[in-house]
Length: 80
Picture 1 (cartoon, helix red, strand yellow):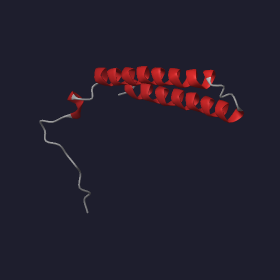
Picture 2 (cartoon, one colour):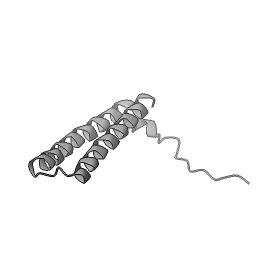
Picture 3 (cartoon, one colour):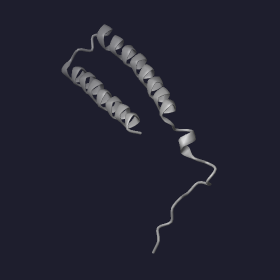
């Protein structure tokens, strides 16, 4: 028994849409948006006295997971 596959017509290729320069531009846009949102979050965390252990843990986790995700995205684009 053969598994059916989804295929596009031969005239439509995803390589025309998702090539390396386009992916790098998308990555940079996400990075800039992340920096802006992180700056706003950090400002509020710092200025409004959110310094208890739970907030510090959440803040550390937020930045560590973000770093891992951006490294994975960068490596994916690098090897695309």
